[in-house]
Image (cartoon, rainbow, N blue to C red; front, top):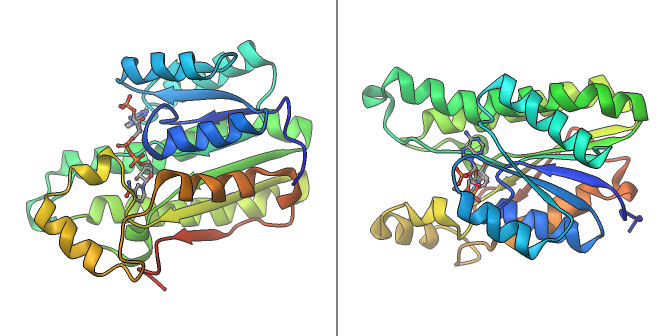
Length: 244
Ligand SMILES: NC(=O)c1ccc[n+]([C@@H]2O[C@H](COP(=O)([O-])OP(=O)(O)OC[C@H]3O[C@@H](n4cnc5c(N)ncnc54)[C@H](OP(=O)(O)O)[C@@H]3O)[C@@H](O)[C@H]2O)c1
């Protein structure tokens, strides 16, 4: 493991769910975490209490101007930005036949365009310093598709294309770009799935259970580590064997 002390990470949706587990892992390595959130100010307050010296930044990642503002805030406050974790995401599930165009647009905007806006916003700084880590949280749904989630699946699969292209563009500049694709993880997002449907999902997971946020976070920590410099353009699946 390399030394990450003094590094700065921007983790979108970093104050709850999988993002909070990522923030906690990075903070434990001596990284100053700038955590993004959109509406949950209570979770943001709790995050600041739990992580002295870290910061919380409100903004909608579906807005390019919010993304640019948040990156400026982080650079002004902390002076550097070593790691970007594109974690925040939403769902708006319906079959294609019933899906309003607005739900399609919103999910693509937040889950895919948000990662592009932020990656673009951090790039100049990372290129100037000749180092950086960009890690996007995709999903098993991006790998396999799912009934009622065409918008989410398209956005999450789109992250693979963004990752591989940006990885090639930056590989000689000291920047790595990777994806983590979780299966079903016990967070509020999965708590929104009706119990009957969730039981059916769990029955199809070879490991026989949901994953824990920290089981995703440990892979993000691994990819963010300075010693992972030769790993770029990859997708790491964390899904209890549900998709192979
Ligand atoms: N849970 C799973 O089973 C699972 C599986 C595969 C992939 N994932 C992916 O993992 C990531 C985290 O999932 P999770 O389960 O931890 O989700 P979650 O508990 O629903 O948390 C989502 C986080 O994203 C933030 N967020 C939502 N919309 C935003 C926006 N427009 N701008 C900025 N922040 C926004 C939320 O902030 P506010 O609360 O302030 O709105 C929240 O902090 C997502 O990308 C998700 O798609 C999750």
